[in-house]
Image (cartoon, one colour):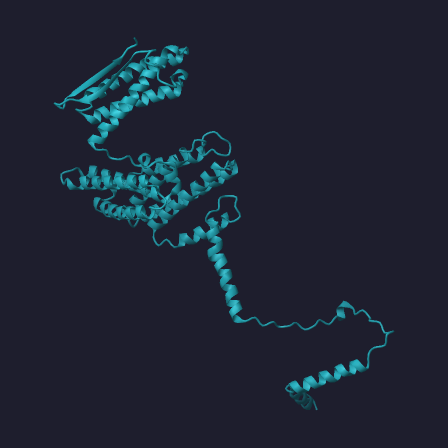
Amino acid sequence: MKRFSEQLKKKSETIRLRASEKAELQSRIVAFMEYHPLPATVKSVPVPKSKVVLEPYRLIAIPRAYVRSFVGVTALLFIVVIPTMAESAIPGDILYPVKVNFTEEIRSTLSTNSYEKVVWETTRLERRISEARLLAQAGKLTGATEAEVLAAVQVHSDKAKQQIESLRTTDADGAALAQMTFATMLDVQSSVLKSDDSASTTEGKSTVALASVLDAGYTEASSDSSVDAVSVVRLLAQLEVETTRSYELLSSISDSATEQEQTDVRRRLADLESKIKTATDDTSADTELVKKELRNAWTDIQKLISYMTDIDVRNSLTVEKLVPAVLSDAEKLAQSIQKYELANTQLQRIKFGAPLITEQDIVAKIEPTIPKVADLLTIATTSMYVNIDEAKVAVDEALALTESMLTLYQFPELVEMPRTDEVAATTTIPVDDTEGSTTASTSTETTE
């Protein structure tokens, strides 16, 4: 009997109504309900929660095309759109953690060797400095934010140092080049921070602490003696690569950089190529001296690359500040004469205003400086056409002294030069005679 019941149950599970039978049954039930409605006096009885019968859920079919589109849009949003928007985020923005902890970390994994990782950590450090400058310019560089930036800078510096040490075990030359590049970046970024006029005192705008950290890092990185061991062959090979890269970068900034900026960069690249050629052409030159010249060329070319790739650097510093041009003798002469005239003019202003100063401590500093400046200008006069380098040094020192006195002691009477009817002025300007010897023309204007 039991076996029959099991067989009956099993058989019943295989029996299903056909669609037509289901429709017929449904129509009969509906017709019965229409002709046998419930009496009006019958009230609905609340059903206990434990006995509530839930309606069966409905399956909604979504086309696969829609699903694929939704997944694609979502992936595009999280992989492309949000990270792109986060690239301009600064500390305090909602997307800043995405930039630092997601986008940049993914890019870190794409670096295939230690040298590339050093370069990337260096780039990340530059980003933190740029963010700090933006906050400082907006007056939002609070103590807490500055501490956060300093911590991030330290993290990136430590990672760069670790990668340099790791690279040193397999490629000593590559580690030395990475060390020089890292030191150069710290020097450039420190100069950028110091270029901000408001960076020293204004609350919320001070980047002094950050610049000090960069200076300390630069001193440590640049004093590493391991860079001296890099070979001339490796230096020349990498300089050729970086020079080619620099010309490509110069072409890429043709729309964003001014014509003068491009001309200045092109001039420095030509100077570097000449310096490299001069250092390597002389086979009798001391190898250590050649290596030193090539290391200096490497540092200069890294500064130029930073100037071209970092808009903050280009907006804050002139290329002359980063990489002074190698002047020809004619350019040195023209520049020295111009500086000579300016220093001489400022000296006359100081001589005119000095007797009007009453503070004895200021007078005590000015009185011995005035004859020193005069002596330097005399040296420049006698050597201008004989030894231009000596004249240039004398003129630069004289100009620095006069500007220092005018700036530090702030002569209120020296806003304009005294009129010729108030004081006699003697100006000595060096000129070249026909024999090529040094002479001087002196013009004296005296009150009538």
